[in-house]
Length: 357
Image (cartoon, rainbow, N blue to C red; front, side):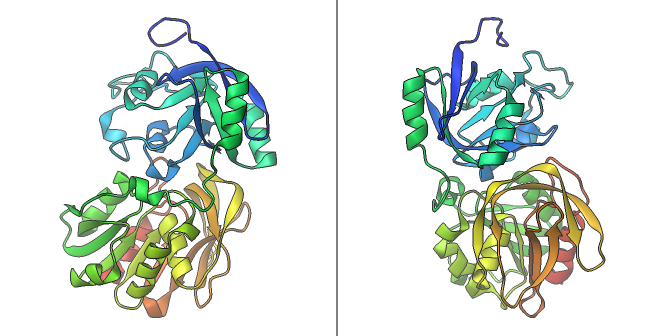
């Protein structure tokens, strides 16, 4: 039953490899929705996940069975609007219970134009994606034949510049810290801007901004944000970062990490099903300490010439952090701002502040 008490329409989720899951329609009403399907293992923070621009082009399946328990509120949005293509859940809670909630998740999805499907066996789905990898899908109230055809034609994120769809169209200023930082918006989360805004006055610029324009602002440092899609498709931003290295301190997170490594001559590749969750163990190589981290990325960094690897994933050995002392630059693949997630890595913002002088 929906939050309004009426019966939900039957719906199907069809994967590009032909696997079919039965469920019910929720959120925005659509006959067919498509996108690249990934799973997220976070137990809470669904609103922050749904409004993270890094999910542009993707459909998010939550592994935790009950989603929507505590509703939604405006304070927890990471961007002005969701950029994900849809949501898959086991049980969408019809009646949230939390003093901060302004409305239920089902209504919020409908108002924001995000289609969803509930009643899905997400345990079976997650096992399938873990074995077969992230893949395009289609879901909705259309017939199985139409959904199969749509899933077969749906696009993965490979080779796509999705940053252009989520970056700011114009420069704006945030924060009131004592230093001056230029922040590249590749799909930046509001939590990142709040942390950086305590350190510096931020000038947030579009992803296409050339290095010459950034240097003309005479910043104390440059921040490279998270964002969606394939870093190999972002030739312009990689060139801009390469032009900035050695001229100003640089700190990158997630996609920003991948772009920094690409600017250093490193390679990137697509993971089978990505890292999406809030409990990923990462080892800090300088002292062997383990940080529990929040992560959201489908692509990873390979070898990086002339860079020191500072962090690695204890799950699969992925490069999770690098630094280049001579260029006064460093980056991490995971999310130290952790919205949602643990706070083990928030010290990295203080590390950046020390670099700014």
